[in-house]
Image (cartoon, one colour):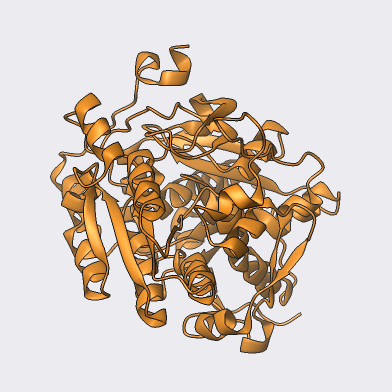
Length: 449
């Protein structure tokens, strides 16, 4: 076996040629999306009014284990993929742990995150269908940035509804989107019917992903030649993100490495699902029993405090209902700095896996997350995104446990992006003004009954 390098790169020829559809191998399939009017599973025709037809087909596909990545998308991926798997030697040494720590780094593109993997796919299918443009929501701004890049590349109009607190906290991400030609609107806004209704009911709200989704869907369905695209939660998005896990698994196998623990941050679930999918497929088949950990913010704890029920995917109740771990579609999360994790529910795929006890979840406080982020930046030299730092916090905790027990476990976590557009968050942490808001049961709709 060759000596393991600091950074493991794949050759271009080793980049995945197909996305992996985990649902095909799941014993218990995720429950179907439900039309709230008919209470029946949504049909391809119904979904095609909101999403591009090909994406709607992917959303409903739970039989094909592999779906070919079109050549045009693979050619775009070559700009920044394959992305490296990095051995965190410096972190291991600093912690004094026998654990071996690896991370899959997705921040090596202009959007600064993994989001571009799905953005280019969704924009491609919209262009192929002959559409004028797309609408979307964005939390922290990584998704909006990625989609604006993809749309600029393909000459599509891009309209982004950005969660209001992030619009104000992260002006530079907003300006990157505008530089790529996107129209960016703080959400909730007075530009849509549902936005006005939300503002009337929650007049002091700083917004949420659920609000922004409602506005983006209304904008798409009321403009001819437009469709809605989403940056997380949906099965089609998780599918596109499996390039992360497929590359990570191939890279580690080149050097005979197999992780014992796999960790990812969890908001809607696409990056975590993308990282774990090929490993989870092996776990389901009984090939290896990986330990998989989802890490979410204590201020928006869908897995750890939510309920597994059917709920609306958006605050304005214009989208289908999904069976997922949810805090309630009217839950208004606090204005934490990990804006990409401020969603009330979780992917139906991950929700089913969690309910089947095939993975576990932990919730962590914001200040503890930023403490881990600062430590990682000082030791490994990369300033991580607030979202990614949730996974870093859990990875450090697991490495410390290995130090206590003397076990040399192999840990893999997802470093989904960089935090160079998140300096307001780091400023709040460094100034000591960051708080650790945790909602009470009365503030979580599903716990109020």
